Structure formats: structure tokens, C-alpha cells
Image (cartoon, rainbow over all chains, first blue to last red; front, side, top):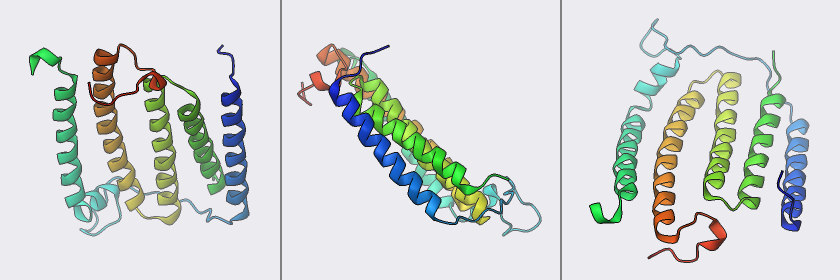
Length: 87
Length: 100
């Protein structure tokens, strides 16, 4: 167990204060409490509500962008992780 | 049936744990883990409100956010590998220069 420094205690107090404020404000709002089951894929019609329907109809371009981002991250990660002499 | 408060409180707790980790820890890998905890808190909120609002967009955003978190972790770990090679440490308060 690490000994707490003074700055750690200040951070702990600040973060707990933030948590108390957030929890208070969460309890002050009356949230909806009727849960719905969202199916992974809805094959009844083309515009059904399902995660896969939404992913590949409404957010198709976003999925392509995320794919590009992941490919770029992979190339960049490999480039950065290579040793200096191998470049 | 779980009231929405529970998910929101859990999410706020995860956010605060991550924030505390970022503020107090000096090891870069632990800071990266704390960032991931904060991202997961946001994703939990997205999923919770997707179920309560009966809208799959929230779960789609959660999937995309998980993909972005994976990319961030990959690039971050590669950067820390480089920092360790040039500085010999990944203690964040001992790293003073960005270019070697």
C-alpha cells in the first residue's frame, strides 16, 4: 500500500466533492424508468430499430471513418513502436 | 427493473475514479488506464440512455467509442514505448522535453 501524499489527499477530497455534486444532481432529476430491449438486428423490415440496422443504415459513413481511423492508428502505432535504427 | 439513477451513479463513480487516477498517479500506463476508465463511464451513459429512450443510436455510438478507445490505447502505448527508449522512464513528472 502506497502512502498518500498531501496532494493525493487534496485530489481525493476534490474528486469526492465532484462525485457528491454529480450524485445530488442525478437524484434531483426524475429520469425515465421504463427499460426497452433493443435487438441486435431487426429483420422484420428495412427500417426496423436494431443496433445493426442503425449501424449500417444511418451510420454507415461513420463506420467507414472509424475503419480508416483504426487503420491509421495501426500504421502509426507500428511506426512509433519500431526501434530508431530500423526506420 | 433498474432505475436510471443506478447507472448514472455508477458512471459518475467510474468518472471520479478515473479522474483521481489521472490527478495522482505519475506512471504513464496507469494514467492511460484512467483515461480508459473515464471513456468507459461515458460509454456506460450512452448505453443506459439508449435502453431508456428505445433508440439504438446510443449503442451504435458506444460501439464506435470502443473502437476509438482501442486506437487510442494502441497509439498511446507506442508513444510510451518511444518515451521509454529516449528518456529511460515513463514517470510523467520526469519527462520534460517532447523532442529528443
